[in-house]
Length: 607
Image (cartoon, rainbow, N blue to C red; front, side, top):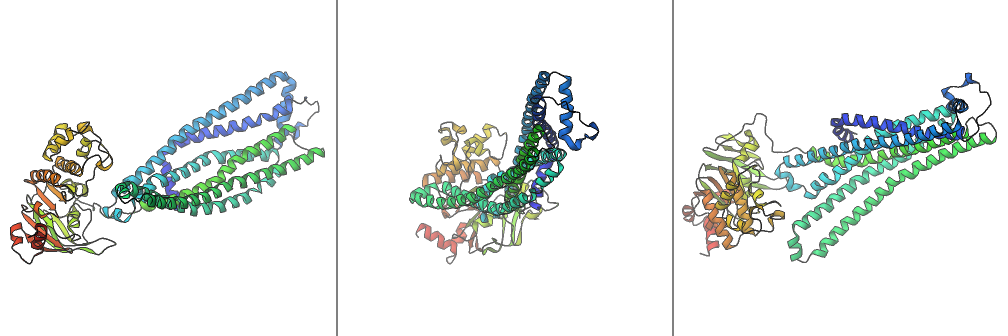
């Protein structure tokens, strides 16, 4: 129930629109009832000869509604021409249906606005929260689950909310008005009919309980399918290179088959509510026909033919809102299942947050200090062990070491993608955790080995995160990154769309655009995480030339496997197995014949 109450909170901002929709729905109910009610005078008064029998008006009351209406309409027919009465009633019938449908359409327009706004708000809340989560969350969670939550789960929740809103403003008013009308016609018979409703409700509730369980299963299986689809499309080159198309199709087919079977069971149970409610509706009508027919045959009937026709018509009309009201419970259970997944995501707390009173930092002046820093991932072993070092403003610091030594983790701690589990990192003497995350990351530009580009124009990729940047600035950054020449050769120059993750470009071109993006930001601290390791020789030379121009006069941290790219660094840190083993300039480290740097250098240059 808590989950559903949290879902219902998304309705509150739309109370005004819902009030209008509710009023329109009530008008629809009234005119729908009127359109049925006009059948009685048409049958009883117009198509039957008027009675000449005196009726004891003292006993007429609303508790005998059929007789009450028939008597007064009979008197009206005796006072006016029957053709005139027929014309009025037929025009009234047309007007009632016209207004009924008009109010239904207007209600649907207002409801459509509410429905879409609720889904939009929830979808944006989930998407914003995903962006607020710490980087470590994404190493543990599959992207398919997140995509499924944003798209599929939000849709299911929306369908559930819409079903509840529509039912709340449509079905109870209809049911209550119909019930009152039926009791006024014949309260004893109506009471007998209504005794059957709890049986129908119990059967439908049992179906709803099963739907919730199966709904959660279907949502999880949908997430599995989205994950497979995402991974396959992201790695389509590898799939084709290893001729694994049939393997991937088989894997997807298996998940899709399981999902289809679950959805088949859900659909089967969902559809069970309709025949249950319809059967009890027909059973109720059968009871009415039996008792009323028996009275008519015995000459003891209290209803006129028109009254009986209206009574059955109201019962029939009442079946639809009762059926929809029963289906709401099924929809609610499915929505709760989706809500559990969505709110579990929304309840996940980001591990990297601004602490109360955190201050902004506008400049880096002096020293970045790692003080006895230890770090481990939640599901892994220790990656950094008691690392201490300083990075001075304006120097170029290189970090080298074997694979798995902790180099990338070392630099990931600086922009607070993660926080140390022990020790601390300070910038100009201030603990990073005492600074706002946005201002801290605003000091840094990052270029990684895996270039991250968007399916957008070259211009927008370079200017990412900076609105309204003049074209001259973008071109200047591209020139510094050795990218301007190849960009101008593209079909539309800087307005060329580069495809998903920039796959229309070569690796070297992508890397230079990524570097241009960092240059345009003009950060005081630049982090290059193996920016040239995946490039061919020509591309590496071009990127390296650009890097050397960028590093001048800037605090830079460079991770590299190729030692030729870091020989001119002011200092080199050598990491191994998470520990800081050596530190110093290139020439000094080479003099340590037993050191790891010396060994790596000899292996690379075959000395």
